[in-house]
Amino acid sequence: MQRLWTSGVSWDEPIPTDIGVAWSRFQSELHLIENISIPRRLTHDNIVCVQLHAFSDSSERGCKNIYTDRLEVDEIHAWTDSTTALTWIRSSPHRWATFVANRTSQIQDLNLPSIWRHVPTQENPVDCASCGLFPSDLVKHPLWWNVLSFLRLPSKHWPLAPIAQQEVDDCIHSEEKKPVVLLVAIKLSILNLLDRFSSLIKICRIVSSCLRFTQSRSLVAQTQIINAEEISRALCALVYCVQLSSFSDEIALLQKGLSCSKSIRQLDPFIDENGIVRVGGRLDNADIPYAHKHPMLLPSRHRLTDLIIDHHHLRLKHPGLNTLQANLKQEFWILSFRKAIHSRLRSDVDYAGPILLKGPRERSNAGTMAYICLFVCTATKAYHLELSLTLSTETFLLAFTRFVARRDPIKEIHSDCGTNFVGASKLLKPLEELIHSSSFQQRVQTHLAASQISWHFNPPSSPHFGGLWEAGVKSD
Image 1 (cartoon, helix red, strand yellow):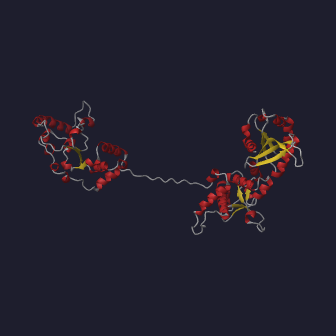
Image 2 (cartoon, one colour):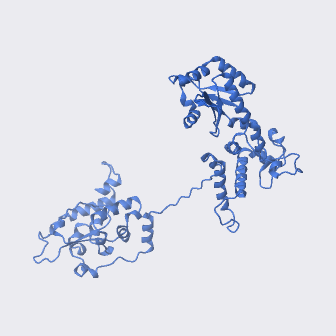
């Protein structure tokens, strides 16, 4: 019946000849089943030990569920003629592929792997059931009705699994998990450090440590201290990478001896022995350092450019634009120099106070009310304090002029609109009225316009817009 189903024969078609012959023989020999008798009792009176021997074989024809009461069984022995399956069962399921691993794990959960043994194929009685027998063959089949001869002997004489041959090894390896090691090569540039850190010196120290690995061990000093030469070499490496990413086309043209873009061509650029683009000029014979004669070229809009400007701005104690530009030109040439520096130098202003100011020669306890005009650099978070004796426009402009004279021209200024002082003490009401007055704002705007400085007032009732100067007032 199984063969008819798998053959795909329809109801009105004749059955294949081989199936018809097998069915005719089975039908003609079916009456021989009457000659088979099985005793109802299979036990003996004097039983010492009850063993259950289960033989297995793969089959595509027959299968049946069998229930066995394990309470009456002392020992269980499982037999298989497949050395491959025996190897799977005796090994850890984690070694095998999913299909084999699930089934070996289920077998090991039910019984110990040690109960499994090997039986030769020609002595496996279950082979009769898996392959199938005709009634005439089943009646007197010696392997089906008689116990195996080696089972009458002690267990030490039972057959052992043969040494695995090449075919068995191939079957085992086909189901064995093969560890796969993936090596993902990610090309990381040192420019990634620019976005991770805000300190130029810290980035240079990291790059210096990386450059030490590229040198011979005998050339590297046996110390953890990074010297100035290594810092300078790391900075040149950063500039080299920035130039490759920002001036790749210009570098290719310079290497071929061709003219590059106008903004760079007018600087008479050239490539030095380290591959860095430097600015040329007529200072070759000047008795000044090489970096001063030929500064390194940098783009105006780049993270490294911002870090260099911030570093020198902080190192020089927040100088003005001209002072900062003059110091930067000793080592770097930034395209759109003043514009790049202006974008990093923005200041905010706020008033703090009032405070009680007492003159040095005053003997009385009476003092004069004064205020602190606080300027904050949004680039470096530096504070500049100026004393304002009165809350007048003239006094503020004087304080602002002193600030600009010390720190050089400013590009943008942000300040409170004044409504955040509502509800304060009576001492702060004159300050609110001053900042709120239109005359104050007009005169300040006119004064700043002459210096090309933009003044921005924060929205009313929005003190969070001035977090920088509010924090400075709080710390004071």
